[in-house]
Image (cartoon, rainbow, N blue to C red):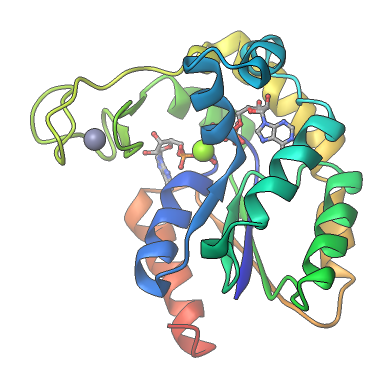
Length: 220
Ligand code: AP5
Ligand code: MG
Ligand code: ZN
């Protein structure tokens, strides 16, 4: 099964795709996480992507095409993938359709998450992530058991560099202009299941709404 999680920055793509991945036992392909790892390791790809990621702009499509082609050719991606943060432009959406069709596969489900811009700006200033395992926390809504320490591996949590309010505002603008239009592209497809959920309230409510839809459609 090939599933996309679409939505603005901070709408919960990382949080909910992890829930879905555990329940369905399908690997996650999170382009933002991959780019941050490349930047951290100071690879050639990381060096060329850094200026886009830190300023909240999209990394050019041709760079993303290379990453996606390489990753989807991996053996563990052959039986299904949960995409978090890809595609983000119409060109990326069309390219993904083409690669999957060459693999005799297709996008089976799109989950759109949405929240208001004001809520997102407020929420991202309280996000913390574990640099070791990637687990996502929120200091108020989903705090770790011990202050700023990952529950799973005891690593000190960090704040993402692009979570400064001015960069979050830029990321939201970029989302509304370049990514939101692809929702119509997916909605127009007749051979896949689309649904959306508001993630405005506490994380548990959105999570339960998503699980209810999965159960109703016998996905889990
Ligand atoms: P990426 O890492 O994908 O960032 P993003 O899309 O901006 O989204 P976030 O990771 O910030 O938010 P999320 O939706 O995952 O929310 P989360 O679950 O953490 O991309 C980063 C950058 O990489 C881009 O700006 C771009 O430069 C580049 N890039 C990546 N992919 C690219 C592509 N395909 N093409 C070109 N460039 C690309 O939740 C947010 C917070 O809310 C957490 O703290 C969570 O605990 C909290 N929270 C509170 N209430 C809730 C609730 N009800 N539900 C869920 N979470 C909640
Ligand atoms: Mg994320
Ligand atoms: Zn951790």
